[in-house]
Length: 107
Picture 1: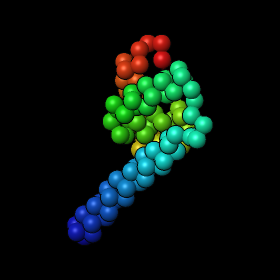
Picture 2: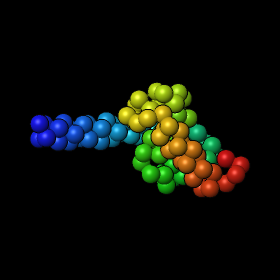
Picture 3: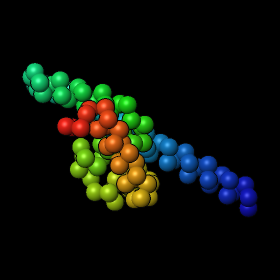
Picture 4: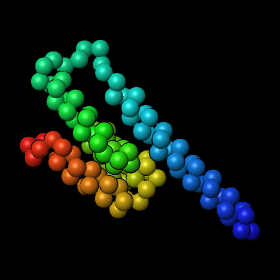
């Protein structure tokens, strides 16, 4: 019985890992520059935001992007990441705090 439990646990961990990577990969695919790129200050601001996002841990980045850029609810974000809602709230809060540090208070 123990070996079945261990096997199931390892399978679940692997599935969770690959699910999270799939969400991040899908987000990165959508972030490719569009053919008509914004000019001047808009482009610079976008580059600043993307650079700041890249300073976040991958799970924080995924949570922030899903929550604010993809406009998912906390429950939908939690489901997409396979995490409890409380954990998602914490990741988003810490991620946004880090972004404020990187971008300045006016962000």
